[in-house]
Image 1 (cartoon, rainbow, N blue to C red):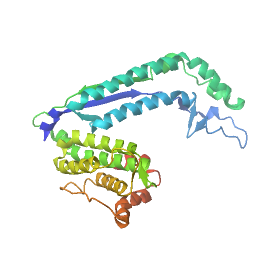
Image 2: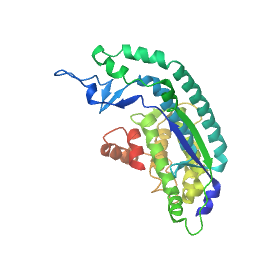
Image 3: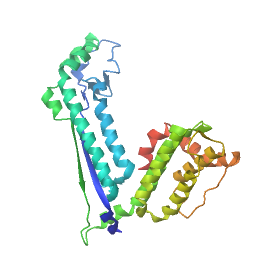
Image 4: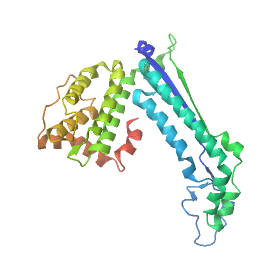
Amino acid sequence: MLDMLNKLICVSLNIHIWSGRKKLQPADLNLNAGEIPPEELASLGVKKICDPDELKTFQNLRRRAERACEAAGVRFLGGYTIPQDKAEAVVDELRKVAADFAEEKQHFLARYSESTEVWLKTIPSQWRHMVAEAIEPIESIANRLSFSHQTFQVQGVEGLDDGLTASVNTLGDRLIKEISRSAIQTWEASFRGRAKVSQKALRPIRAILEKAKGLSFLEGSLVPVIAGIEEELNGLPKSGYLEGRDFRQLVGVLHALVDLEGAKNPVVLEQDYGDEDIERIIEPFIELEEMTPMPLAAAMPATWF
């Protein structure tokens, strides 16, 4: 099983983003009866000492790096493992993110003093001192914003690789769960509550299949399933909206991607679905939503890993 590690490149992301917060001290709360700081300023025992909007760009860049890794690989050893033939493209994207991160960091630090002054003026006067006294020097902030990545290959140590073998043995299941999560997010974003979709709705499905094909050696039984789904997609119209029978076939494709664990045996997708079939197909989505008190896209990372 460890032989497959020769086909994989591991990627580790090291991204540090300043929170713009500090612990709320008792001395900060010299309150009169009924007074509490506004939620935008202090909550859950911390106080915000920087405009949160100023830091969103770094959070977006971190997510962009994570998406680049997730699009081609699966989580492994605290990072991601990616097929060798996809590693160069992933690293190229990470280098672009690193360059954008460095540029945004430079811009953020250049306007740090000015943006802090603007932020202070938006705070009610009775709370302003609480933030002003906690403002950190620019040198400290610079050290808390960083982006880097490392790539490497893993090799077992003979006689001592029990834990590594166990981790490698879970990669196929991880791939299935990540594909399922992506299919559910696609359903939420593009299909729920609709009777037709545009050609754009095919893009995330094709991206899921591209990832599955690249890592199919982790779970060989998925190969015929992927081939069947690709055949279905290739038979769809190449332009215009997808509705009626075409829409129902797409719903069936998503259902198969969500339930890959149950579809690992060779499967032939139905060519058409009636109304009763549609109800049966979307039932797992409905059940998942009922079990989840928040949107599925937000809940999946916590429940599937």
